[in-house]
Figure (cartoon, rainbow, N blue to C red):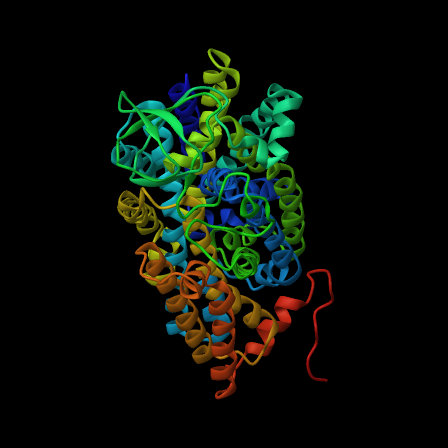
Length: 560
């Protein structure tokens, strides 16, 4: 049933793409849907695109693993649209650009600055595509028995064909349709599970100390080596052989199966937050292996709030609105839809901690939303509901990946190569192939951590560029380039160092795991300081005037 539902969602997306191909006749049709998308449809499409598979599965998994402080992720994801609403949406739409690099060249009169912005778009797009393909691969691997590499390739093929057929017009209808699918297939099952666990289950979910024991005899299969902390003696079965674990540390090898008896305390995982412990209950971010929770929390909020304002696949949607006022109304619709949806990941994470604590031990906590229905309801309804959730998660992958792949294709074919409509369709395949190749070795990385890196890079490159380009006439091409390079190199370097585990424990690890708190100020400072050494380009004042005068205002007359 699960594969049938996933196939139905994928076929619906392909059908919408095939329907839309007949009305895509120009670059404007492909990139911005001829600027004719209504606020309601655009708001639904933005919400469908923004509510990614990576953020949904990742937040639910990290709540189970690291505690309630992870709920700052959805707070930041949603609050970022306030920055878009107040400071970016209407002026950027009035600039008349197709893409962010278009805006940069118009504002700064610099082809070099345009290329740097195009490179930033590609960097953000591919970084954000990786966790989408990761999540899609895990879904097909778990429910379809498809090997992870093949599952990632299939996911990339489906989204590439969908985007190549219909461009932005196709993506708009696909994403609006898939917001409804996600609300029905992800949020509604969460409500059903909250009811199904009963008052005892709901009470345990909000009292962490009650979820630290196995409710029934449980076999845990480890997919990676782990070191477990045992506080009291416990009789276990390791690969079929009875054993007694004394208090202390016990190393578990990859592919080991350990069966815990009913009522046994869930061991702690070395380097992770204790289930039900003080760190788990504290409303601060406690990522695995991280330190300095208050700093990480503030840095995460900087990344998610400001990073939203620089996400290229969201920004390009503003250009599909007929005018600046319509762009703002679309953002308001999006805010309402996001607030409704982001209650669901928290519910899956909190319930998962008490119902399937074995995920805390084995590592793939990102799958909690997929396995929780079967664990709560049992066969046959539990398996059926798990299939529904998996299909909803796959819809989330298709919606977000469509938008990301579209801006990556635009970044290659329009912003860097200035290609034709045919070239744009070819670059869709190139963009998908690169995303697949990056996702294959990233299987073991935490999905939400990779998402956080994408937001940090966005907050450190395109966000300062847009805020200063829209609101400060003194910005120069040299200043914009210096800021993008400084912010992009620092945020990307921190992400790579974290992924390789190259940072020593303590402050160095915290600074690299959550770099936005220092990389964003660095980018702003570089843009301002270098711009002060030069002069803004001719015509900057005229473009700024066009961006800030509402469409309903009378034309401004110059001279006598």
